[in-house]
Length: 238
Image (tube, rainbow, N blue to C red; front, side):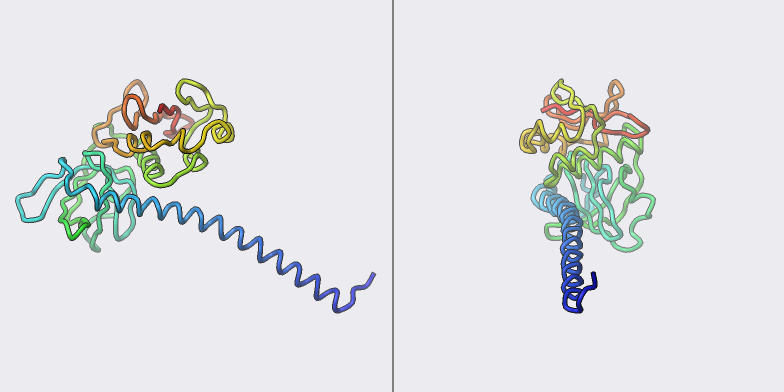
Protein backbone atom coordinates (compact mmCIF):
# COMPACT_ATOMS: atom_id res chain seq x y z
CA UNK A 1 0.00 0.00 0.00
CA UNK A 2 1.40 3.38 -0.96
CA UNK A 3 1.53 6.24 1.52
CA UNK A 4 0.28 9.65 0.57
CA UNK A 5 2.59 12.60 1.19
CA UNK A 6 0.47 13.71 4.14
CA UNK A 7 0.56 10.25 5.81
CA UNK A 8 4.32 9.96 5.29
CA UNK A 9 4.83 13.36 6.89
CA UNK A 10 2.70 12.30 9.88
CA UNK A 11 4.74 9.12 10.35
CA UNK A 12 8.03 11.03 10.22
CA UNK A 13 6.77 13.57 12.75
CA UNK A 14 5.67 10.76 15.08
CA UNK A 15 9.07 9.04 14.83
CA UNK A 16 10.83 12.34 15.56
CA UNK A 17 8.64 12.87 18.63
CA UNK A 18 9.43 9.35 19.97
CA UNK A 19 13.16 9.89 19.39
CA UNK A 20 13.00 13.19 21.28
CA UNK A 21 11.26 11.59 24.26
CA UNK A 22 13.82 8.74 24.44
CA UNK A 23 16.68 11.22 24.22
CA UNK A 24 15.20 13.33 27.00
CA UNK A 25 14.83 10.25 29.23
CA UNK A 26 18.49 9.34 28.66
CA UNK A 27 19.57 12.89 29.43
CA UNK A 28 17.47 12.93 32.60
CA UNK A 29 19.18 9.71 33.79
CA UNK A 30 22.63 11.19 33.21
CA UNK A 31 21.63 14.46 34.84
CA UNK A 32 20.24 12.57 37.86
CA UNK A 33 23.60 10.82 38.38
CA UNK A 34 25.51 14.07 37.93
CA UNK A 35 23.21 15.92 40.33
CA UNK A 36 23.69 13.24 43.03
CA UNK A 37 27.48 13.53 42.67
CA UNK A 38 27.25 17.31 42.86
CA UNK A 39 25.03 17.13 45.97
CA UNK A 40 27.65 14.86 47.57
CA UNK A 41 30.32 17.50 46.91
CA UNK A 42 28.08 20.29 48.21
CA UNK A 43 27.34 18.28 51.34
CA UNK A 44 31.08 17.87 51.96
CA UNK A 45 31.64 21.57 51.35
CA UNK A 46 28.94 22.51 53.88
CA UNK A 47 30.37 20.15 56.51
CA UNK A 48 33.83 21.55 55.88
CA UNK A 49 32.69 25.11 56.36
CA UNK A 50 30.62 24.30 59.42
CA UNK A 51 32.95 22.13 61.45
CA UNK A 52 36.53 21.78 60.39
CA UNK A 53 38.17 24.91 61.70
CA UNK A 54 37.66 23.20 65.08
CA UNK A 55 39.37 19.98 63.95
CA UNK A 56 41.58 18.99 66.89
CA UNK A 57 43.90 17.05 64.58
CA UNK A 58 44.86 20.15 62.63
CA UNK A 59 48.05 21.53 64.14
CA UNK A 60 49.29 25.08 63.88
CA UNK A 61 52.56 25.45 62.00
CA UNK A 62 53.50 28.48 64.10
CA UNK A 63 52.65 30.86 61.31
CA UNK A 64 49.57 33.04 61.44
CA UNK A 65 46.47 31.29 60.09
CA UNK A 66 48.47 28.28 58.87
CA UNK A 67 47.78 24.67 59.84
CA UNK A 68 48.83 21.11 59.02
CA UNK A 69 46.70 17.95 58.86
CA UNK A 70 47.09 14.28 57.89
CA UNK A 71 44.46 12.31 56.00
CA UNK A 72 43.30 10.30 52.99
CA UNK A 73 42.17 11.85 49.70
CA UNK A 74 38.50 11.12 48.95
CA UNK A 75 38.04 13.12 45.78
CA UNK A 76 40.29 15.27 43.59
CA UNK A 77 40.25 17.54 40.57
CA UNK A 78 42.71 20.02 39.07
CA UNK A 79 41.54 22.86 41.32
CA UNK A 80 40.35 21.23 44.54
CA UNK A 81 40.33 18.03 46.58
CA UNK A 82 38.62 16.49 49.59
CA UNK A 83 40.62 15.02 52.47
CA UNK A 84 39.29 12.66 55.14
CA UNK A 85 41.26 13.98 58.10
CA UNK A 86 42.64 12.11 61.11
CA UNK A 87 39.75 13.63 63.02
CA UNK A 88 37.33 11.79 60.72
CA UNK A 89 36.10 14.91 58.97
CA UNK A 90 35.92 15.71 55.27
CA UNK A 91 37.96 18.82 54.45
CA UNK A 92 37.56 20.51 51.08
CA UNK A 93 40.71 22.28 49.86
CA UNK A 94 41.24 24.67 46.99
CA UNK A 95 44.63 24.40 45.29
CA UNK A 96 46.63 26.70 43.07
CA UNK A 97 48.28 25.47 39.88
CA UNK A 98 51.64 23.88 40.70
CA UNK A 99 50.91 23.50 44.43
CA UNK A 100 50.77 19.72 44.32
CA UNK A 101 51.92 16.95 42.04
CA UNK A 102 49.34 14.78 40.27
CA UNK A 103 50.66 11.61 41.93
CA UNK A 104 49.82 12.98 45.37
CA UNK A 105 46.27 13.83 44.27
CA UNK A 106 45.14 10.26 43.58
CA UNK A 107 42.07 9.09 45.47
CA UNK A 108 43.00 6.84 48.40
CA UNK A 109 46.47 8.35 48.88
CA UNK A 110 47.64 9.38 52.32
CA UNK A 111 49.04 12.88 52.60
CA UNK A 112 50.01 15.71 54.90
CA UNK A 113 48.53 19.07 53.93
CA UNK A 114 49.78 22.46 55.01
CA UNK A 115 46.96 24.94 54.53
CA UNK A 116 45.54 28.27 55.51
CA UNK A 117 41.96 29.33 56.16
CA UNK A 118 40.26 31.89 53.97
CA UNK A 119 36.81 32.94 55.09
CA UNK A 120 34.95 29.64 55.52
CA UNK A 121 37.27 27.69 53.22
CA UNK A 122 40.69 26.05 53.13
CA UNK A 123 43.54 26.68 50.72
CA UNK A 124 46.29 24.04 50.38
CA UNK A 125 49.75 25.55 50.32
CA UNK A 126 51.77 22.34 50.35
CA UNK A 127 50.96 18.64 50.15
CA UNK A 128 53.32 15.78 50.88
CA UNK A 129 52.87 12.01 50.71
CA UNK A 130 52.22 10.32 54.06
CA UNK A 131 51.84 6.64 54.96
CA UNK A 132 48.59 5.54 56.63
CA UNK A 133 48.70 2.68 59.14
CA UNK A 134 47.12 0.29 56.63
CA UNK A 135 49.05 0.78 53.40
CA UNK A 136 46.80 -0.76 50.78
CA UNK A 137 45.87 1.50 47.88
CA UNK A 138 42.95 -0.66 46.74
CA UNK A 139 41.36 -0.74 50.21
CA UNK A 140 41.78 3.01 50.67
CA UNK A 141 40.37 3.73 47.23
CA UNK A 142 37.26 1.62 47.90
CA UNK A 143 36.84 3.03 51.41
CA UNK A 144 37.09 6.58 50.05
CA UNK A 145 34.37 5.80 47.48
CA UNK A 146 32.04 4.40 50.16
CA UNK A 147 32.56 7.40 52.45
CA UNK A 148 31.96 9.81 49.58
CA UNK A 149 28.83 7.87 48.61
CA UNK A 150 27.38 8.05 52.14
CA UNK A 151 28.34 11.72 52.54
CA UNK A 152 25.56 12.73 50.19
CA UNK A 153 22.09 11.51 49.34
CA UNK A 154 22.94 8.04 48.03
CA UNK A 155 20.10 5.51 47.89
CA UNK A 156 20.35 1.73 48.22
CA UNK A 157 20.87 1.29 44.48
CA UNK A 158 23.92 3.59 44.52
CA UNK A 159 25.33 1.98 47.67
CA UNK A 160 24.87 -1.53 46.23
CA UNK A 161 27.43 -0.74 43.52
CA UNK A 162 30.14 -0.99 46.21
CA UNK A 163 28.81 -4.25 47.71
CA UNK A 164 29.54 -7.90 47.06
CA UNK A 165 26.61 -10.29 47.18
CA UNK A 166 25.55 -12.23 49.06
CA UNK A 167 25.81 -9.36 51.56
CA UNK A 168 25.46 -9.83 55.32
CA UNK A 169 23.14 -7.26 56.93
CA UNK A 170 22.82 -7.45 60.74
CA UNK A 171 23.79 -11.11 60.58
CA UNK A 172 21.35 -12.06 57.80
CA UNK A 173 22.30 -12.79 54.20
CA UNK A 174 20.91 -10.80 51.29
CA UNK A 175 21.39 -12.51 47.94
CA UNK A 176 21.33 -9.62 45.47
CA UNK A 177 21.08 -5.87 44.98
CA UNK A 178 17.42 -6.30 44.05
CA UNK A 179 16.74 -8.26 47.25
CA UNK A 180 18.47 -5.47 49.20
CA UNK A 181 16.15 -2.87 47.68
CA UNK A 182 13.10 -5.08 48.22
CA UNK A 183 13.94 -5.84 51.86
CA UNK A 184 15.10 -2.47 53.21
CA UNK A 185 14.23 1.17 52.80
CA UNK A 186 17.03 3.69 52.33
CA UNK A 187 16.26 5.34 55.68
CA UNK A 188 16.44 1.95 57.41
CA UNK A 189 19.63 0.56 55.87
CA UNK A 190 21.48 3.85 55.32
CA UNK A 191 20.25 5.62 58.42
CA UNK A 192 21.61 8.93 59.66
CA UNK A 193 23.39 7.05 62.44
CA UNK A 194 25.14 4.72 59.99
CA UNK A 195 26.06 7.56 57.63
CA UNK A 196 27.43 9.64 60.50
CA UNK A 197 29.48 6.73 61.84
CA UNK A 198 30.94 5.76 58.47
CA UNK A 199 31.72 9.29 57.28
CA UNK A 200 33.46 10.05 60.60
CA UNK A 201 35.98 7.21 60.12
CA UNK A 202 39.64 8.09 60.65
CA UNK A 203 40.89 6.29 57.54
CA UNK A 204 44.49 7.32 58.10
CA UNK A 205 44.73 5.34 61.35
CA UNK A 206 42.28 2.50 60.63
CA UNK A 207 43.95 -0.92 60.50
CA UNK A 208 42.99 -4.28 59.04
CA UNK A 209 41.45 -6.67 61.57
CA UNK A 210 40.89 -10.33 60.69
CA UNK A 211 40.95 -9.53 56.99
CA UNK A 212 38.25 -6.90 57.45
CA UNK A 213 38.50 -3.14 56.97
CA UNK A 214 35.83 -1.52 59.14
CA UNK A 215 34.33 1.90 58.49
CA UNK A 216 32.32 3.28 61.38
CA UNK A 217 31.88 2.25 65.00
CA UNK A 218 31.54 -1.13 66.70
CA UNK A 219 27.73 -1.05 66.52
CA UNK A 220 27.17 0.91 63.31
CA UNK A 221 29.46 0.14 60.41
CA UNK A 222 30.17 -1.22 56.97
CA UNK A 223 32.94 -3.78 56.53
CA UNK A 224 35.08 -4.19 53.43
CA UNK A 225 36.94 -7.35 52.47
CA UNK A 226 39.07 -8.29 49.49
CA UNK A 227 36.83 -10.33 47.21
CA UNK A 228 36.96 -11.02 43.47
CA UNK A 229 40.20 -9.05 43.06
CA UNK A 230 38.88 -5.89 44.69
CA UNK A 231 37.82 -4.44 48.05
CA UNK A 232 34.05 -4.51 48.49
CA UNK A 233 31.45 -4.04 51.22
CA UNK A 234 30.62 -7.54 52.47
CA UNK A 235 28.79 -6.62 55.67
CA UNK A 236 26.55 -3.85 57.03
CA UNK A 237 25.65 -3.45 60.71
CA UNK A 238 23.29 -0.79 62.04
